[in-house]
Length: 227
Image (cartoon, rainbow, N blue to C red):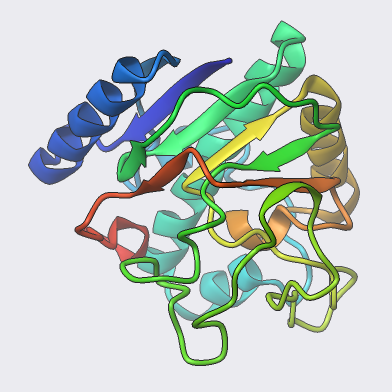
């Protein structure tokens, strides 16, 4: 599978982590390339910037409370939208990686319908921001398939997505053209939300694989909170 590693151009640590990521994927036979992402300084130039938001969603709340954080979260989400558009147009499944993704094994040779989580063994462990008390210790069953019933991370905002399974972050996933089209259709139907809130089981069929081929870099730069 082809993939892109999103990094922040001009940000020294992001660039270094992205290069470390690139080396790890190449060493395991992946076809990936670096891709400079949209940033809070450039996001307002995007055609998506002024599109409607999911009412009472995460992005909606940030826009009402803190423009700087909104622009940061919106730039992250715009990187995903651009990726989905590329997957849909190219008609081939592709992978999305954030700069702190480190590959530990070759590309998995499995079939999946729409979305495939590629770092499930690490999303509820440090340095992941989801390593919180209520999630700490949760493990995906070994194997591959749809997210299990026991999966604990649910959409909690009071809107149409409530109680759906949320993506456990967006650091590493694969997407088929069918999945990309479903996500893009959901944008037009419901509006925009924070990326890991918007990638949910209402909008796309969510699969995982364990052992996972991707883990996190040991340092979390926390650039999704501003930089």
